Length: 160
Length: 160
Image 1: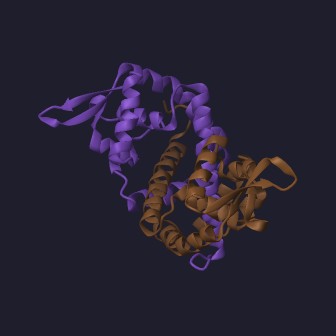
Image 2 (image 1 turned 180 degrees about the vertical axis):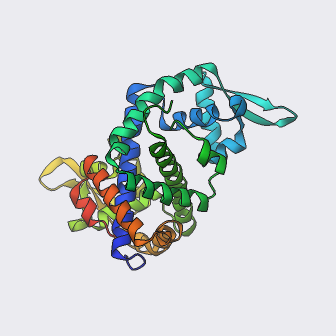
Image 3 (image 1 turned 60 degrees about the vertical axis):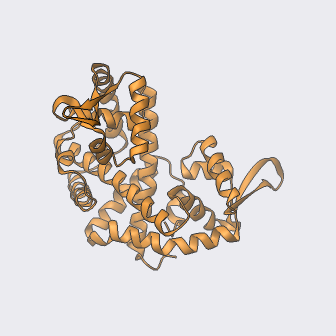
């Protein structure tokens, strides 16, 4: 079952997917240990914190999070119950709705961010030399463009 | 909120985490379009297919998948209902149980693997030059070791 990837690329793929899943699990554990936030909660707060007015249409938020509409509705509803976001009708489009960052959501993000970024440094970034940083940036920015990442997201996010 | 990562490392982290999540979503979509398997199903089948006797204790499987015990029980039960795996008591330890790959599970994996690996090639691996492959392998093998990946897994997996 290995015929479609040469051995070097297969070893690369295995190391990448295995370690990335392990890393995401560890980061989520660290986040939950130091805040009330899941990784998905944190991601939503970051995205909303960085757009003008700290609000996004639900469809745009789903696109940036790569969530299905139903998963996003579930995620935002859970955060709404905890006061981290609010939902409002879009100005000029009563059928649309927006997720809006609340002050409580912003404060929760600001409290969680230093711990989360320290965890990112400890588990991954502090171990990379400059050439590795440049290589990963090049590879994953190219990948994001190929997979249709919104360019504003790619260049605007600053606290994940 | 960016004080704990320099700007090059922050850009690297953003590109990596954003593109990786986008990639995983795309691979799962491709997998579901060409098979009856989720990414987690596929991963379980791969792990079981590569160990002696095609069976693993539940605790060892949870450790390799980085799943909590409750999540693994849910995952394996769902696969058991579909005939992809079976559960049996461990020989010599009636309290322990093992997940065992069935013939139907192996056939499902063999049918899904070429499509899945083609998807991995298309979305990621074909775009990398040899130096990038070497860099990613080095970085993510180091990461896996730091995060406690089982060494047998790192060197044995051959069809993810």
